[in-house]
Amino acid sequence: MTLTRLPQPDSSDCMLPGPPSRNNNGSADLVSTGLLAYAAGSTVPILDTRSMQLITVLPIPPPSATSASSISPFITAVRWCPTTLRLDLLSHDPTSSHSHLLLAAGDRQGRICLLDLRAKSPESESESESSSPSMFLETNQVAKLGIQDLCWIQSRYDTWIVAALTGPSVLSLFNIHTGRCFFKYDAVPEILSCVKRDPFDSRHFCVVGLKGLLLSVKVHGSVSESDVVLEELRVGNDVSELVKMERESGVVNNNYGNTPASGLFPSYVVKIAFSPHWKHLLYVTFPRELVVFDLQYETALSRAKLPRRCGKFLDVLPDPSMVLVYCVHFDGRLTAWRPKE
Image 1 (cartoon, rainbow, N blue to C red):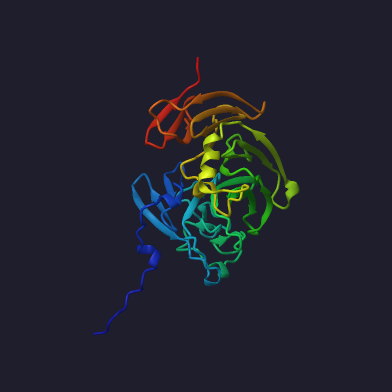
Image 2: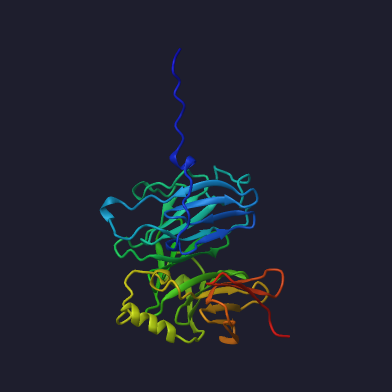
């Protein structure tokens, strides 16, 4: 009788994710076919929400020994790549060079990794190649500007780029084929908080900051800075609470280091969401105010104060089927808002 050794499974095949923590910044993304990607520690679990089954867990490899840092590589942003192809397992073509199961994940050490759901795990940074199903974008690993938020933007009809909010105030655009950053904008002394794509024009996106700065950006290519048109707007908000928090945390001369907004002021959240019903209309939530902003006329159409007995605003989500806006609050409450008749 001979002993037959069974092949050992890949460690990622039998990995169970730990629970998400505050360090993960609540990062998650869900596509219409039910695939949920969320951050848990330094891994990205993928869940099928229709069957409530765990599909896989994609670990992000730790930084190389030569780039040791006291900052743990917690995942802080996760975004599926939008595409006209079906985002599900059965329609995946592993021979295609343009995978439609592509995911971008960023961490507190400023790394951005492109992950393919069919890949067992991403390759290490030193082994990453242009043909690899997973790769790291070329971020500044000396400055280690933590990732605040990510968004996929269409630069051409068949090409997508990644927009990233890095550190407290930097907007960076990356060509995913070369991995290089081709556009960078520093909004200091603003602290950038959220980036969202326009549902009516995938080349257009907006970025909002804690102090009310609003960037309206349109992309016409992915080669150089001349492919990007950026406009600065101002929503206008009461920043007295933020100024007090800066003073209490010892911030001097707008020196925030390399920490993103979620690490600097986790209880002070500013979010934006495009209206799915009207072009140029944007919903902005500050901790104590909901603002409806018109990008075309560059002005606030209405402002609503935080309801009594409700915690500060945490996030905003427009209803796709009716003119209704949902807001999540820090105390777990959910409020629904509609325009006045």
